[in-house]
Amino acid sequence: MDAINQGIGWVYVYLDDTGAFKQQRFSPYEILPFWRDEDYTKLDMVVRIYDVNVKNANINRNVNMLDGTAPVIAVPAPRFYDVIQINDGKTSGQEAGGYKTVSGFRKVN
Image 1: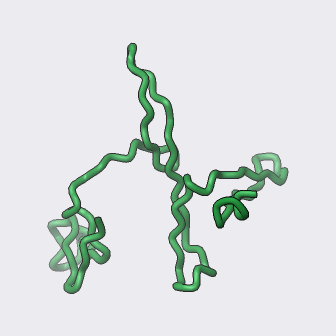
Image 2: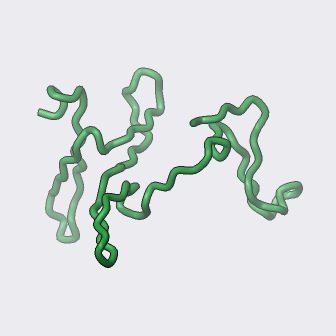
Image 3: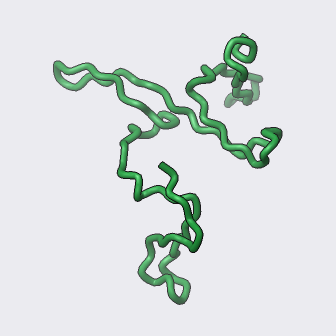
């Protein structure tokens, strides 16, 4: 039904620890796909973004989660580029580690 109502549906198919076939449906609005090609026929990966209710003392709030691992924290736009060079800290000229932008980069957000 998701594909009919929202244009795309997502089902995660896997084998559990006993080898039994399992599947998990995810809401289309929770899934952010990354396509390998411009025709949207080859999927590179997906990221799941969803809300979790967090209780801290007497405060309840919804927090955006990324694949259930960490809260999504907004950062300033200058931190996101479409192309960067990641310095490994070992290669000549990369000893400082970190990253630097590459010629022709674009700011993402």
